Length: 104
Length: 106
Length: 197
Image 1 (tube, rainbow over the protein chains, first blue to last red):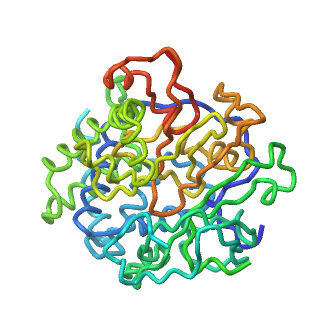
Image 2 (image 1 turned 180 degrees about the vertical axis):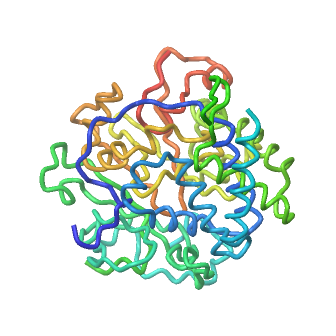
């Protein structure tokens, strides 16, 4: 369908609803908490968060879990808003990865 | 028509449509962040209520303030009008919040 | 990562991102770890019991019910529920009408009243099919709606958030609000279940 965005799925054919839920992990809850705090502080709007989720490539949109999409979008939003830079994030991710692989 | 929620943007409110009025959702597919679902575009429904005036989410998504606030309505559509293969009573409806700039008189 | 003794799980890319973003924001003074943890706790306290309180009061008090239907936000504030920025529309189930809520575009939901939405509410299959074949999907949830009852599907596309006010079950005459509230499940306030005694 020309012009229909991937996330805009009302009425699309789909399978039976898997009526499952999982107890959210702490890291997932922290993502939710950060979204609420940063939003309430006026540092971004939920509309920006949604837009960045919607702009994920279709296969990423389908494969990523809910909070994986949220952290991806929140981080993009923070970069767009200038609260962090890509370079800072890259350095920090390297640092954290090194630190976490040392502790086992 | 009284809005259900009086927001701080009430001054922007001069709604074009009244409760019960028949409206058509614009059939167009522009780019950007849009809160009018694709499945309802081009369809005719009736105004169920005026929710109030809210900043335009299409603009908020682009880090702009979305003002002046836009009247937001709940619009009721008969399922049989929306889906050609709908199997259910005529009284089944879907109700959707739609911003005024996506609506035209039917 | 090669020495996985079964207790240490390597971080996923997204877990790495969560830690990294949070640490950066803390370093820059944008948030604190204390605030994040406090918010996690606050979110844990926002459970469906809050929504159930509203429904139980509407069942017990017809005048409150009318106020709730007229302005859901004001009705919640009236009973002391803290509901920041919520624009609540309560929709009433009757013998002629059954309501059900979906957000086809993402997963909008009255979180301050019902908590974090369940996985199925956010799933492709629910979001795609509930607007188009509500009767079939409701049957998958074990709810059969008779042909002489209209279904209203509410697609939560903008600033409103929705709460289904289920019908009060028979056999609850004389029950107080606290007891009535125990019958009101999260799923009945979404519209995919019916309260039962």
